Length: 420
Image 1 (cartoon, rainbow, N blue to C red):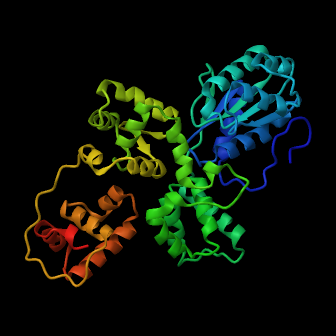
Image 2 (image 1 turned 90 degrees about the horizontal axis):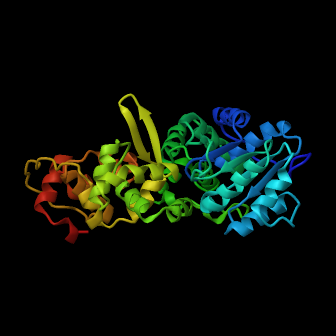
Image 3 (image 1 turned 180 degrees about the vertical axis):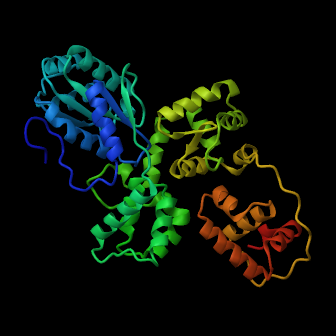
């Protein structure tokens, strides 16, 4: 279904959580620039924001808002064909002919999912902007176009209160009896924090609430949330589960970008440029080149920039960090983790264990012996602190030990690998 009047802008059939600031910025951008590129990591809702901006601006374009979704387009020829079909002009075969067709129009061309077609899309956009003075372009891409003068609208994760509102709304859509109570609210908030406010991740999690209570969903998500998946056939294949969403970005990166991405995955939280340079150099990149490669990852919406009072810092979303970690084996990961080893804990005679540890519990016990706190262990293993707390309780109970210090002492005197 499309909107009334000229053009083919799709009608929205679900509400949009938050994004008032981004929409206002997009509308301002279209009034001041002829090209606005909506960018951001996968799953944050770039297409929804762009569609809402286009709806808000359509009265400015009496010759229509023309929308082309490009995820299935493979090359320049099929790109031109897709845009020509959108306009109802299948006879157009070159970018210049498309530009000529827009000549004299006050129209908006919306190009959605451009990141895999940087060269062809940039050439088409330049031709349209050069060939007509009144048509504007709104592009949606994880990667910035190579067109001078573009206005960039960055879409990031939702703030916590908007993420929670989205989870509740989508949960009620699949289960009309869903209610958020004082008892269940902490679980819902922790789910949103674990998913870092990424709307697609939250929507996929909400779909699980038809069969799982919040507490059980949170517990199951800890180790498996990259595999959260939906069942809708109306979305792109790479948007049906979170791992595919991020693997798409990985496939778009060059060799050096992938190396740095994976090297940065061992860093929890935000980090300054010098730490990124050290991690990149440890992974084999020339240290002098790391800053440029880091900028590429920012332009690819893989790394987020976070301005602070102390200067610029950078961060990988957990979605991207997990995929990077999965591509590192233990031998690669060890030299990149520059946390200094703690002093050895006091030796305490080990007590006999009542039951063997699981592989994950043995891993947590080893990290306790390295002096890491539960929060640091959670960051290292990319799981929630709540799960680490539970593992520690199990370790103490199974090993008949009284404290973390005793666990550390036991690990230094026992070979846990043979007692799983």
